[in-house]
Image (cartoon, rainbow, N blue to C red):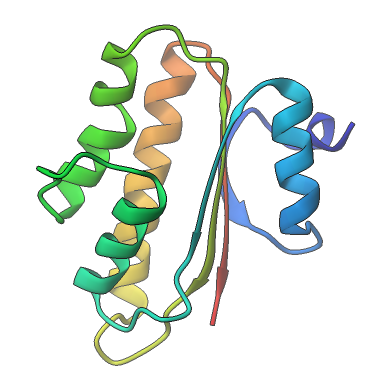
Amino acid sequence: MLMQTVRPNIVQAIRAFRVDDLMSAAQDLGHHFLYANLSGATTKQEVLETIARAFLFPAHFGKNLDALHDCMTDLVNKSGAQPGFVVVLEQLPDSAKFDREGREQLLDVFRDTADFWAERKIPFRCFYSFQ
């Protein structure tokens, strides 16, 4: 099984994994599969809007990093027991308007989210790639 080689609460580059394989692994485990293709985004705002749309966040989503964290943690936690998560952020932009610092801040939200779910003993694996 694919996920046996991946720690249960981690944020890591997608590397040798394929999106289809990660989706199948999530289905096999009964975990939520969240996917966002960010190839059309060039700014932080566009990245957050694309994630919000792809992950079906509520209309009141604040489109900032704090709101992203809240949607990935508290909002989901309050909706009931969770089986686990496999998240794919494909093609994070590498542009002047979304530079290395912006990418690291975004990934820090997902690292904090992984820690949040680890405290609850719920697997949260996030994979990302860059444009």
